[in-house]
Length: 384
Image (cartoon, rainbow, N blue to C red; front, top):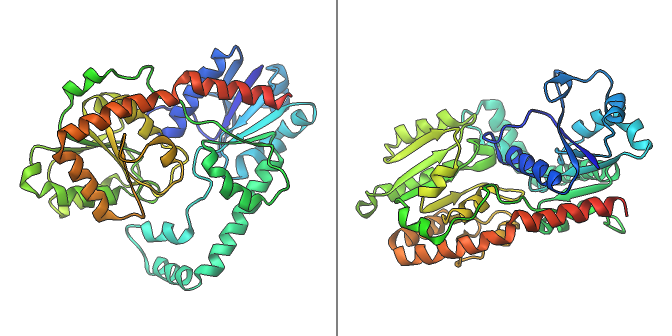
């Protein structure tokens, strides 16, 4: 099979989870013996194959003998609709197959949450917040109908609609309202790093708390982690612990301003870097995202024996982490409980070590071999 990947930008593994997961998936497809082409790009500048402009999409697909196109944006009509209108529709009529891949939690963020997350709110923003809050039921139904329309389009125009976990199926089914759901399929992100560390890595751990994420408040709620660290860092028994944040994004300055204003100590912003060396040294990992399709950084920390403390805001987290065995899941966005969980692990080196060993074992469940089987089944299922 010749398989092409459709996205709206070039792939950079240091930018975000979607990019890293895509690069890994492309390599896995090749291991199955297929040709995997990365990357057809449709953006505001036009249509490209990697860096080369595409004049005629239909002819490009035919000349490359593309059998399957994997649409990487599973939350919007825009990319797939543009692909179909520019020649992909004719290609599909002649037998081409489309897989839409959802890299996020299908239960998308509410408009109210978006406006609440803005740092410098204008009067207009406050008025919108008031309107969304007072008419919450109306706008909740409206947003639900909008996403129902989006997911029905993507589902109907694709041969398979893939999420990162079957835990996302109930929500999608509640929107799609179909008699059968034979197009739904789940493939988790595989492990990012080529190996799972041995328990000996625990001998080289520092007293470091780590967060790896795109620095976007609306998507990652890093302000919650900073508030928790502010409280922890002021306690004398934790003076030998540090907090490192790896990543970049639109809210970097916002977080730096918070740290400066509140005199938060022993926190460093490392920028956009390869996170693997940080996982190798860190003891604890924090995730405070309001939602995730999978949580690639969680399996990354498991691979390197870093114990995660996670706000349990998405159903998929309980598929990755066994609570109180290889990490701690904190319910209902309870900041006090989250802080208590972090301090509990900082206080108890034996508990930390036990959970870290369990984390290494848990990572095996998401190995390349296990994920590869799911890709193989998907491709075979498309043509069965």
